[in-house]
Image (tube, rainbow, N blue to C red; front, side, top):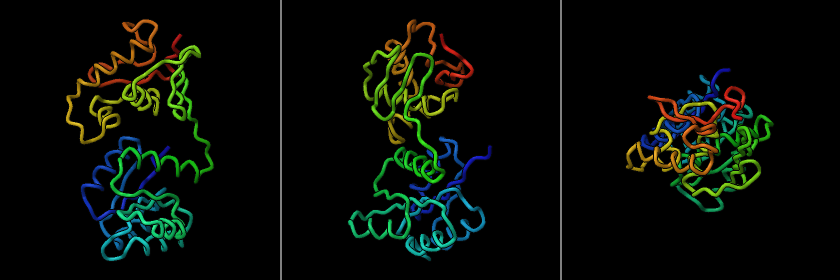
Length: 233
């Protein structure tokens, strides 16, 4: 299956770069534009699955870009703005925007909103519970259970497990996990993740020395066991 393409439109390169990096880590193909005219050209050429659109753009402003994209069909739009006044919010949604994010924002929030809007647009129902053997990660309730018994995790431990649970079987590097758990500005060492993984295994695994759920991929990083392949007992 081909990757879905996201068009990110913002005239601030640092914002475009960090949003691109997080979306690409999540498996999306990302194209970008720095002004409204280039955004419309990229939209016509690439026909992306979703547009992340800043309102304050040179050449053609975000309002007009949104109008033209909406007139061309039902491609979802997530608007970005530095202005939080309710009139902007209502006007933006009145143009047909599917969601609205006010700057400053977390790049992880953008990824979560993109995934949620795409699910709604395609009619999919999001599964908030990931099961690996007798382990359940409930994203909606921010709870973890093993053999139906709650497991008490710290917020960082839960975010780490939830990041791995996003794609069971996928290998995440330590740097990717730091980005997903702590944010791109965190200046810790990559090996910090090892300490969190050790603590997580102490709480989750029947035998932490022989993990069934959070697996090490030597020379690469970590992954959550894939229920269809690893079949933890």
